[in-house]
Amino acid sequence: MAYLERSLEPVLTQAAREFPAVVLTGPRQAGKTTLLRHAFAQDHRYVSLEPPDVRALANEDPRGFLERAGTPAIFDEIQYAPELLPYIKERIDADRARGGQYLLTGSQNLLLLERVTETLAGRAAMLSLLPLSRSEVTGEPEAAPVWCNGELESRRRESTSWSDLLRGSYPELIANPDRDSELWLGSFVQTYLERDVRGIRQVGDLSQFQAFLRAIAARSAQLLNLSDVSRDLGVAVNTVKAWISILEATHQVVLLRPYHANLSKRLVKSPKLYFTDTGMLCYLTGVRDAEHAASGPMAGAIVETAVVAETLKQHFHRGVRPNLYFWRTATGVEVDLVIEREGRLVPIEVKASSTPRPAWSTGIAALRKDLPDLVDPGYVVHPGDVVLPLGPDATALPFSAL
Image (cartoon, rainbow, N blue to C red; front, side, top):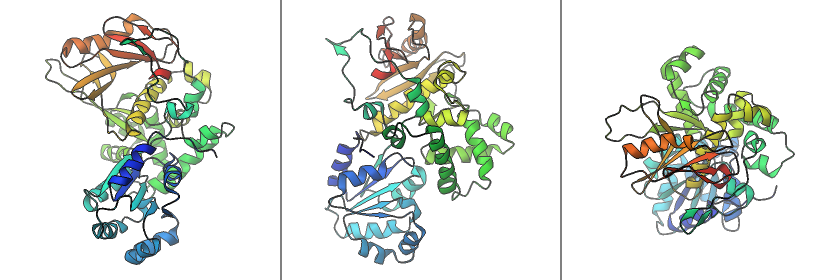
């Protein structure tokens, strides 16, 4: 399989120069191992901790295991042998100034982060790798210029392919366009259940958890109502809450919190849930062809999920932890995505239609009116090919130019 250049590679190599350890998290099959082996193959020994016999050796004699592995080393899927972390700390502290001694990967972010924080605080850089961003898929530079003399160019750009959204952006599917995506995603789900979910305490019945996965997928890009999910599945609310934490920990979903400011209006407090890959979303909701994706009831959720996922990738793959929110009043006026950076807010609305209309900017205009000193002009992202000003508050922008 041809190697696909990742935007995170320069950040990763810099982190390895500056920190004794680097922890790279992300979902299974996002390309963590491939990236590390590509960037560090000449210097670092590679050890996978997933095989049971290797895992047993690491857990039974961690000092001996680390001595045999030597440094620098790549330890893949460190969550299988978390007992190594205190001994890695011990070895790092003996030579604190040397960068890149240990490169660790993990598929369970929150669980792994807790252990790393306890043992490697100040010694490890934490980075995240999601499936491919659009610029990584196309090989185009990040943030392709669409500006001229400070103004966004009113010109056409490539429209979004619903087939691409249906297929998703996992490297295996992008590098092998003839691969049956439905078969691959089905195998991915089964592997995810067996390897990541089975070992987590809150899950006993995998078939029930799989039903939960599909129920949650049907709610992507919506306000998350735990009671509704609990009632539909016949499980306790606390169970639903614990299972959502598992999806977050394994990078399958992200929760956006409502943006709060000192407003007189009462803002909705429930988060919105998004999958991090549109292919997985389509697979779990039974969307099987591009026409169904574009014109079916999930069309809006698919495009909105794509925009949120792309925004996450463009931040994560630069080594930045983004501050992403949505804005919605109790009366239903909303903006799908609000990006906070350097004290400013950038509003983004998402539409599934390819024909921009001025009315699309209503929510952004309302937000700018409520927070005039904080909110910059925003964008309405759509799957078409037109860049078009929609008035003083927003510009219509194709997803391909996001």
